[in-house]
Image 1: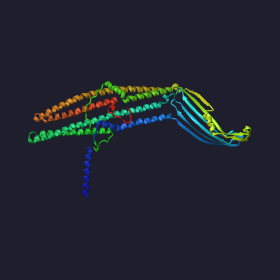
Image 2 (image 1 turned 90 degrees about the horizontal axis):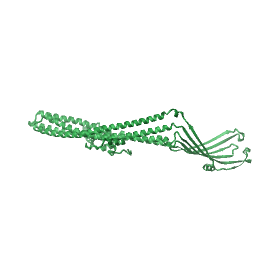
Image 3 (image 1 turned 90 degrees about the vertical axis):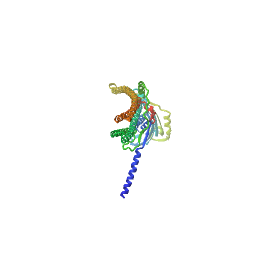
Image 4 (image 1 turned 60 degrees about the horizontal axis):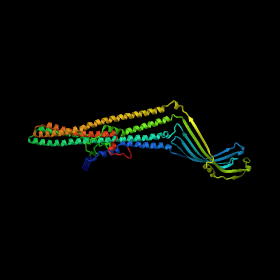
Length: 518
């Protein structure tokens, strides 16, 4: 039984090992464009920044709600029983009052507030000397309060809305800046991976060549045309290339992990995930642009510049607001109200209620008082102007001074940003020209090393060159190819950095993020 369990265990382990090996050889082949699209979808920094404009959008909606109308409704039923203080009313009486009213009120962008309401009430009492009972009363009322100096005008009262809109734009520009930086990060990580992979291929090809050379050297030593020292040199050369491959494979793994991290993919710690294999080749396409064109484009397209303009605009809004707050308070108040009344009229003997003798009742209609109200029969109004001069506005201008300093600070920050962009463009142009020169020199150096290696191999074959010199030429040739690949990658990254600094890499890569219109 133990042997059976051991056999089954070995089979399972074998299957697991084969499965692991199969998984290890799986590949995910990606172009640079595909990596950029994955980053836009999955990169956490971009995802976090994309939430901020949405949050501010809802904050702006909440600010706008201040100017929405508010509906009001009120109802109450009031009963009062009390002793009379006047003997002719009786010793005690009871009064029932039913009241309900509804209306609308709203803050308006000029800084004022209005309200329109309609109230209705019914009163029924047992008190003597009342001529109308039950009585129906109502009133249509319009009220308006409007500041004429301080807090007057749409600009002042829409301050938070205007700043909120700018804040959304600032957040959107921040998102664009984050995306553009991540685009460059992806490009850098992708091409660094390409560089590592291509360099590994160069060394792998030299390893295959050196292994074949070792085989031929051993065969030549067997027949006596080569010595044991020649075999030892060939074996040392193979070991050197094997050591190089280990180092370059580690570089490939490191570059792949870096790209995975930016794309928010699992880091392949145990090599269980499909490998990322870049499919774009390091080909050169020279960037033709002048320094002035790059600088002007950067000043127009960089989201940091647009964001700073919005910050300056917000500071200007604050300056205008605090200037207004220094004005005296001159407020207009206007009331218009139109009452109406109806009810059952009580008829007394000789039209004298003091007799206490009721001789009849003239029934009234509930709708009569509404006819008076809607017909505006009884016109009443009230208008007032109130002037207040706060002393703090005369003696202290701290808020206005602070807002002016904030604006001055933003203007200086804009100037600093301009100089920073200028210096960045200068540096990247120097880097671009330097790497462009390296393209030519590294290609020429690699061509020369190819010719020298061909000549060295021919001399070695004829016995006119030692193996040490041959292997040295082989290493120099491999280093020349790796150097040429590095020059191409560095040039492509200089172009990518220039596009990042100009703020155009979203457009040049033909990328779009969700519904944002950058």
